[in-house]
Length: 382
Image 1 (spheres, rainbow, N blue to C red):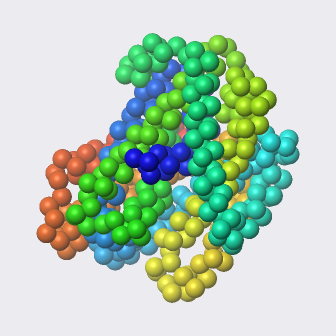
Image 2: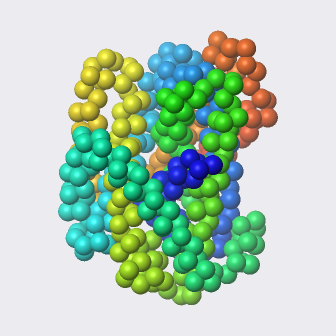
Image 3: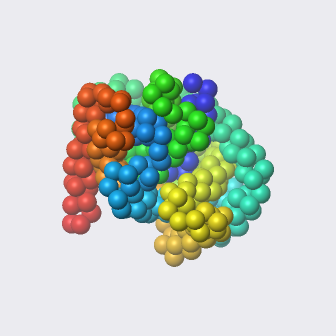
């Protein structure tokens, strides 16, 4: 549980903070329903992905190629595309953090952070130290958010009622939250870390299941606390700053000290996410050709620089952070469907008989997310 808690605190990145705050601002107490549904969908997706990869002892792209030659390349392309979207948003999150701390324009903050991210990536010891520091900052952020949630006295009765009987259902919010939690490379990265640690095979399924579910539940609890903190502020009639909504929540309740602390946490979380997303995205490609593995560090560096260039041209970090989650939510049904098809192939699963109830739960996630994605896309095209 301790490892799951640290993993969950590290998930409090710029996308997590921005998406939760913006949708609470837009939907009010009805966002509680979005949080509940997203947690259930997250568990159904992550439990299946981690379990199948652990049993087959294969990375996702290799498993897909074993299932159907060429399918792994398609899956890798989708994951890398989603990782790029995340990384552009993460660079924007760095800019937002620097802006809160120093007042610097987000574009210049992003450019500065790009250079720092490259330095951290090439000096491994720095990356490890910053990652550990960010995790403990995340714990302090949770405590501060709990304080804000209590101080803002949110309408708990209304929040509970609308969690189960919402006045409005926002499909884009559900797709974005699911995509931001288990979409794209995120679930695969967690499963791949277990494989790297030697946690695989049917004998390790209890640990795999526990890690998959506990991480999602702890993250969901943290999101619920931030939801209540923001709801309390919004319900009192305060208007959030559209250029950085989560930062304004902390400034309204905790003053400038809370505001500056938020900036430090957001920047640290964003900069470690920039390096992590780039590394994990490129890892989906390196098994395809030996040259990719030889020049892996340079490709990762290019990935970070390219993400920064795209952000400089696009701007609007808040919108990018929301779009990144939505895009990865669109990728999830395809990726999960590949895993579920593989789960019934004897040549991949060996003698292990995959639970019917778990496969049914997985296909329910595919169908629900597929429908939500279709509705969201039609809304975008109008």
